[in-house]
Length: 276
Image (cartoon, rainbow, N blue to C red):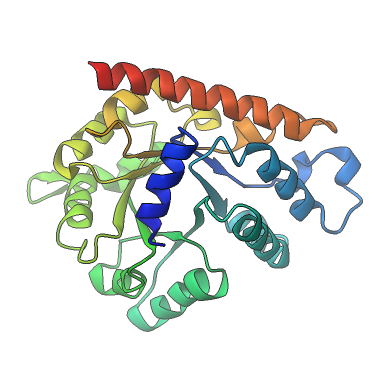
């Protein structure tokens, strides 16, 4: 099934625009798991079991695994989701890119080795470095436009043809580069004005929106700025605020409660925005 069709189905069935980031910080994994060599895989499995009916996707940030030699547990986590909850899309947050030949192998890593539904990429090197990813036509390619960090303004506000770089890139993502309909923009929740600007040019294209919760993005502003004409069009990511809502043996229960509350907040403002 194509990524966007899968996303549409789970958004409807789970009534959710919440994307949960599985970014396990080894220092924050509950004490009772710390002696286990496979503690990351166990932690993730319990979180997934507790939240799979509340999310529209899982986003897995590679750095939290590769920094500690946990690639095998990255693969275990992906395989567990794919086998246990195949209806839930998996995003590999790797922000990959390089010259075409190397990009080809990065694309193989994401879509053939890990078999994820979508991957995040950096567009700085231009279209030929994105094309190997886009050629996987059934998969999503999430392209950085406006990132959620404070330093985003250092480069992304620079003017290109009279418009800020983030808007120039967004126009490419939803237009010229979107040759197979699988290119999607990433816009940080910490910049709701920019979300609205990009929505104005993007129609009903789906956005990946990281940055609510620990990064300070506001749910109401994000939804009001980014909701599409169908009342969807957003994958709003939260990681730390949900993963570490509890630090004891009941961590999965606490994560479920936090995810449910986040979904409810999103849906509240989603409903208001659509009705207005």
